[in-house]
Image (cartoon, rainbow, N blue to C red):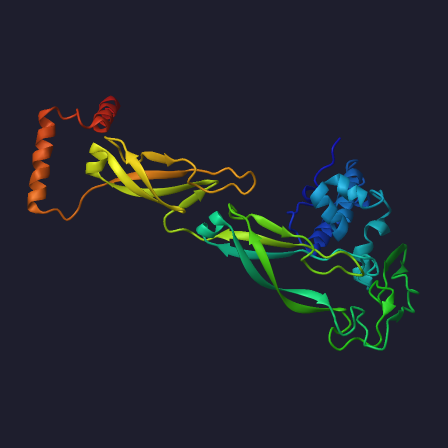
Length: 370
């Protein structure tokens, strides 16, 4: 039987923060723990699913592997699911918060850096042709003063006397015995007695960065461009995260994009609509000539093949779809009004419905209705 999606198990979206994952896990674990549901035989299996999902999604490296490769990636990054433990094991995080220490993984382990999301706004023309844009954003980097150690130059971190450098201590609270993060060193196994004055012991400082990004032709709203290794630096020698540039298209004054197709409305004089003719149509790459057939009605769509947007994945090109709107003339002179009246009279001589097929169809529907 295939496993359920871990995000679905916890009821979270794929962009949930670490705090949201932790908070949701605590709530669900407390609700479904077998000790609290002795009459529900399904509670143990539900609790196992919740605990397994949390163990993967709370670990940045395993979560990244799971997001990319699914369950196989998460299992490859660890020894597999650790199984169902006792009450104190399941609620180690909760009790460590209640009794102090903060809980969590040892900070001495290497961790992948966080990903960065950067939104970029493009015009439709820029998206159609592709563009190179320099973006500016802030991220962390290793402190140059202490070279990332967090200690004042000339000094170095010392082994934590509370946990002996392990980063974890075992605490006894009544019947509960649990291992939790060392409250003295917060899991690092070391103490910085003389912190660096520039990074205040963090080993990293915030810095402004500039980066040239190539935007390929055909990108659409919500498309993400991944720049590997350009995110936040990793911890304790871990790999850096990635930078995701997210595209947002500005609204265009003429065209509306739907997939790879472009749509536009074009006003049409009733003379050309009746007699047919040739009109000029704007496009992103220039102007095009288009033939309008006689007796064209409002709402007719004419297609210009290959004049739309390029598909960023397979290179195919969409169409330009021109929606014709027959326009009624305004500001008529007396002579023009008289000519139109004479024209209307000539149409009636041939029979009222001969030149107005839509009107005839509508009248037939009304008669059948009444």
